[in-house]
Length: 124
Image 1 (cartoon, rainbow, N blue to C red):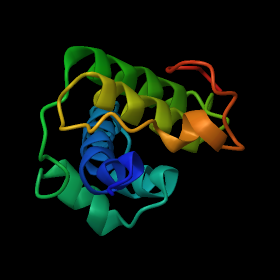
Image 2: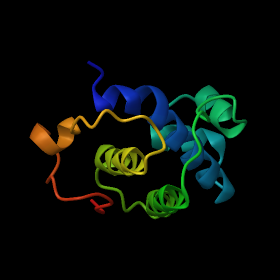
Image 3: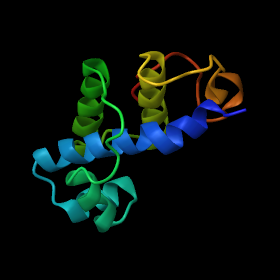
Image 4: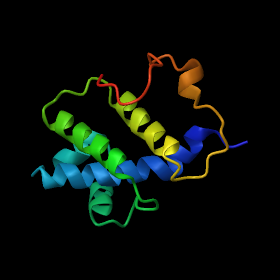
């Protein structure tokens, strides 16, 4: 059995990161700062920026909008829990039907101890 978060880690999160990197660079942030903000290496940021990594699915306009809001919040230092924000966007991608989903519930909605468990796109 493949857990929903496995698909998220291997397919969805890299795509979200790639889009987020593009947004942050578009806002004028240097790659080194973007790497520090995301907790990845500058080489990873370079690969995301050049689309050598993370571009295996096409994100819908609503997901891209959520990523832009996250980028704005990151620049303004309004993100209290990056993990929850990324999880919300990942769940948004899963619910959009862009990837094959066997209908298994997301573990976060069942027992995640960092989540209030109330919907997606919460600003925390």
